[in-house]
Length: 83
Image (cartoon, rainbow, N blue to C red; front, side, top):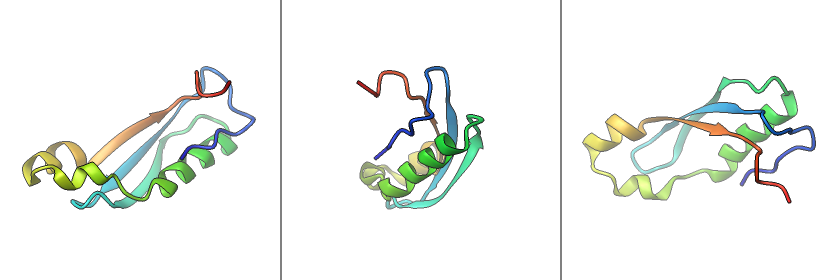
């Protein structure tokens, strides 16, 4: 779901904090660490919004969900994603 902007360069990264509901739907997503490039940061947040739901999370038992999946950090890097 990630549409990498033309401003992206190897070495850039942005970290997004995603908070999930037990059914895998996204409660919230916020930039935790900026890449320093507004278009890149906006693209990673939009990718998370387009994903909408992490379906496999719904199959996780409640204790594991609370420990490992309630809040996740995802790092976006453009390396190797463009041809």
